[in-house]
Image (tube, rainbow, N blue to C red):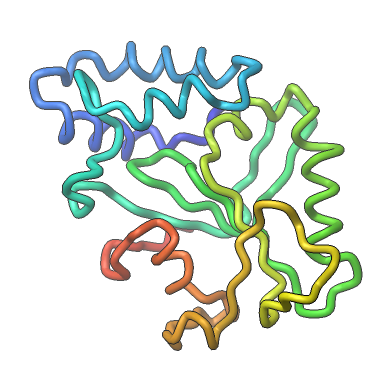
Length: 193
């Protein structure tokens, strides 16, 4: 119902919050409630950045966190669903999704942005998925064009040349760009089926 990977979330919660291990289920219940709020995820964001008394991410020692990613992870509520191309998890929480479009795809990122704004954001069945998401990345795997007139507001644009790292997955996704965005060293990233 939230796409939180519960075993990983529980393990990391207990690791990061010694002395508060017994509060895991109550915190999860509170998060589920916050994700239903009509606040674009502000309540969850405030919880996420808090470091006392409970922390969900160790911002001081990034290696204490668990990082995972998967492709086509379904966000489903009832009969309504969508599947971001790539979902990134921090401590079991799906905090980022990436939409990767083919270069020169008709509509491409602009069509995806319109779909997000017109279909997914207004759909209350997707509220929990949208409220937990802290970063959305859209890429058409093309060079950045500063003269492009139809740029998507607040979009992140990258290219293989600009990142300077040939760490490319078999699908052609530049995983090093994802690593840089989340400040994740490449080693702890694991792939989940």
